[in-house]
Length: 405
Image: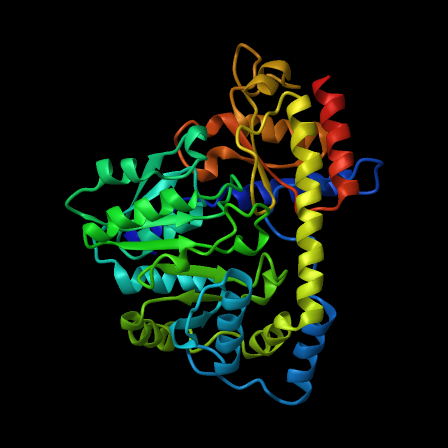
């Protein structure tokens, strides 16, 4: 069967490929004193709070399971609008909020609404791999610009200005970012958006980890800068609803009808049950739980990052949000000899891909190598997810110490 060129352009999602390998090794480790520890997937270990679960059950019992509007339940759009005002001090009218089937659907809708074949979108390297695949699926081209630790692994206005070409349509940013957990400084974000606006482009920003910001400097929505900014958000991370597949998109007024029409055809609507459940996310009791969990994520970061540094796995930029540690494994690769000669003749671990497999096999510790996240020196880096209990993080550090001592 002939496969479309579009599908062939989509690269493997190595995070998930690594997860398959981890699952296979985990079967062998099951029942031993060292079961697999998973620090590879960016999924909170917390689940939806009680009120959210109860709201889902009630929606099912009451038969509220029919289609909603393609843009989502009006009352949910209003709740999200109020959350922006109360949490971030930003006025975002409900009419500009489109509820989607996860942030993935939001990104797809934004790309399909804005990109033509051959349009280029500037993105930082490293960045979340799926974002550039959404650009590719819309017949556009993601242009990765190397971002250094001095730039917090984020784009700068100067780099955007230098890279802007005849086919550039805009920028796609993430703040806080996956895989680094770093945010763009508000001053630099304003400068980037100014460069984009001067050239008639669009600024898209992935803010799905914004609720998990830990520092006042960075915990602000880009929507406070300009109503022309397009923001993608989700109930998956801060609201702990990964499998519920619910997110939202904030667009300028001029884009609402376009996005709605696309959503009608592609998705009809997001999950009705998930939407009714999400209404309970904004109850005071639920918000108190989320804030307690945010504090727990911060405590994990504060403990785990120094532990990595002591083991020769330094994190060049302390993450100010999300639940990731982007660690340089150069020294650790030189220190850790492979258990077999399957890699290369000089018996040294060449980079993060091989290092990750060694950890899986020898320490039963699943992490994510840098390969997924770009091409600019990403072989030096590994991503740890701290979306796991402190007990599991302590056990992981113990296994790393035994292997790297």
